[in-house]
Image (cartoon, rainbow, N blue to C red; front, side, top):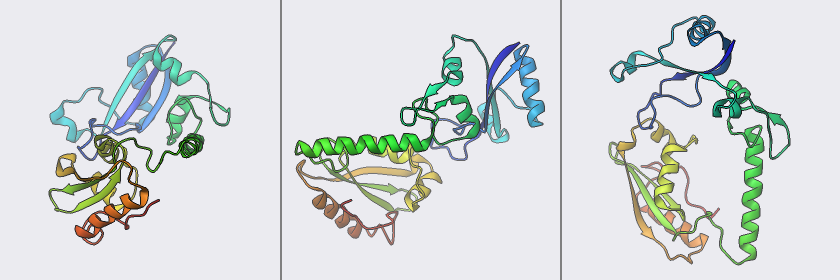
Amino acid sequence: MKLFYYKIKGRRQHSQYHSDWDFPPVATNIIEAENKKQAVTLIEEEYGRKFPQRILREDLGNEPFLLSIKELHPDSFEYVELLTEHTCKNCGIKHRRIDKYAEKTQYYGSDYCSWGCYNYDSIRIKEEIQRNLLGEGIRPDFGGIHSPMIYKITNKITNQSYIGKTTQAFTFRWYQHVFQNQGSTKFHKALNTSNVTDWIFEIIEVLPKEAGEKEISEREQYYITKFDTINNGYNSISSTSN
């Protein structure tokens, strides 16, 4: 008998992403079968429906699911990563990535057993870095190394805008908004229900590199007020220096 690793992918509802399929998959697991054909049959019997393994782009709208399946070999990357027990860097618990896919947790890497451990360790590391920076007299406001910037993101369809501040590279900040947004603010809800091509990202002011948090937040608030982006835009709250 052979081992097969399969993913049943669900089609994305919005087209601003690089992939047509959602992550994580609807289902992910390991199945044992004599060959790939038998593995597919067992999967389809388990879920009570047929799954295409290839879909033409013109047929995407008619197919909500896509089956991806491959045989697992002991020396393959998937076999090692998915079936090997990893030790959580935070709590020391043993875990396998395949189990986390099946449970649909928020963290799918091999370094931590759960989102809680990942988040706890991330906060701890960030706080340690900030303490070290403060000890060296360096301002750790937003964790960036670039000159502070105030930016405006405008929806070309509604002509409404969002005002933000960053000391990161502005291209990275735009990437975070578009591809890493998990929030429930009205701005991120608007992003999630539109196409990326509906938006314009622009830098509207670059501040001196030595500007403090208070000054940066005051300039952000100036533009929030100027463009009325709380009442007639996508900002949810006024700027703060937090």
